[in-house]
Image (cartoon, rainbow, N blue to C red; front, top):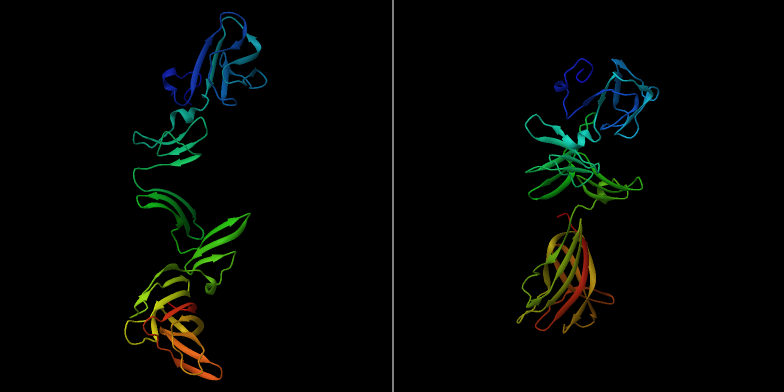
Length: 301
């Protein structure tokens, strides 16, 4: 093995091991001027390997103390590995570049010789970190790309987040699920909000919020300049039917009718007038008529 007695000094790579020969000229127990990692040093005296802790003490990385003094004419050879040897030289990728670096702060760099984090993966392009369960064919990637940062599974498996060793959030093919709930019916698979046009109304300021299959509308419309209108378009198709009372202003009810409601079905909302012991009847909203209200219904869109 390179570096032992009988090898030339040039055989020992300075980036891996150090070999230092002491020619003793007077009785001494101290060997100085060394640079070694404690526990990774070998001492030979006149060709005989000494025992660490018995024949010598090597505890500070720079000096070695012999238990029995070497005498004039003795030949002592120290084979040592320098402190932070890997940190200083890195690990070559066989292409004239340092692939892995461990610095004196114990930061590990892959693709960089100047890591700024405990693990720093760098590349001129998309940089990946992958964890794989090969027994179950599960791959999870964390990556930085030109479009942003990404984290997730690259196979058809769920991504879970937890605190205190308890699952709090799951992302799977159904959408988002919370607190360990795996039921598809309880998945939050969509969220959006915005405005929409309810049809041929003179003025309108309508807004909606859609969470999964649940739609919540805030309708605010004013009647046309001529004629009347008694329905409006929904932003999402309604599953089934639903109804709710709404506020009206400057709207004329038929005799016996006292309040307005909106019934939603399909793609339309229908404005109806109601009264005690009376059935629904269409309510036409004319010029200056105003309808305000909030409506909630289900959709499959």
